[in-house]
Image 1 (tube, rainbow, N blue to C red):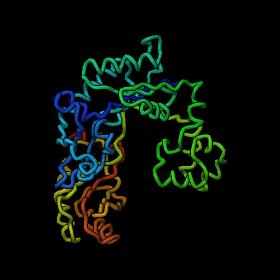
Image 2 (cartoon, helix red, strand yellow; image 1 turned 30 degrees about the vertical axis):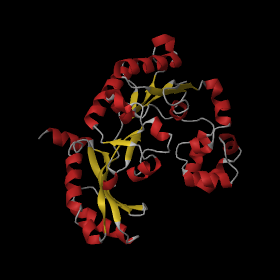
Image 3 (cartoon, rainbow, N blue to C red; image 1 turned 60 degrees about the vertical axis):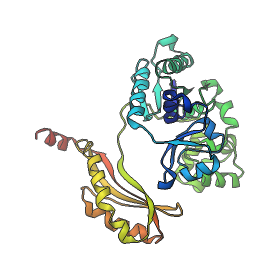
Image 4 (tube, one colour; image 1 turned 90 degrees about the vertical axis):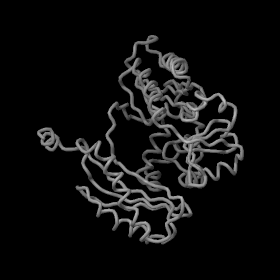
Length: 350
């Protein structure tokens, strides 16, 4: 039986800014881009969330909901430094840490002897240490697997702790809304509700073959998650599956030619970013993402095994012709696969 802790910093970027500037602590605050440059909210504090402001929301929309919202630019170097401090605290407990981003991570404490192996007390200690040493609060979830631990960490936010003991899993899941399950978005939730499925208990009443029939491969995942089944281990080394860059433009790109003219700049940034991973990850495909002025978007990709700027323009042409509308965002990237041992050995000889 595993003991997994999911630790999630509360409104991380905003929390760091509030820690460093007392004037920000009692006002609605967001870290994000300017409204006149098509900016979006990266994160916001809980005062702002009370007005309906959310991450990934256009800054213009956020300011309409909360006219007094203070929007400031992010300071990524500072956030990375604080994140490293927090991760070093986690490492005092276990080496089995799987970071998901700068502000959240899974910890497997199954073999930890601290506090006689109590996952609850370990999580309490972690929360206290992070608050004391960094001034940042974290919410934590303790459970027998990753799926349940992540749900639990969100249960008593902010600055909260939720423990789902093995004997409590069935009761906890009985009334859990299906939209809390990872992968159930708005559309899937609507389809489930149309089938009178609102809770995990409702999902358990549907045979596996019927879930597969309605939801394909995801039906099998619904079947397992509704029963609290998740065998994924905490992995300290995550394999990078893709690398990409994207730009949101201050003014819409009105024509296909305008879009194509942006490819060289994007390629330059992509190559610079990929250069850090070239020795360990090989190209397995390329893709282009286009977001139109009405926020609809499309992605086109193809399998390739080499880098070439010329790959992206044909994909962009296909993507643009799907809607032929003004474009607000362009992105390009590579799908990656682990570099073969032979190639690694060749590279090490240079």
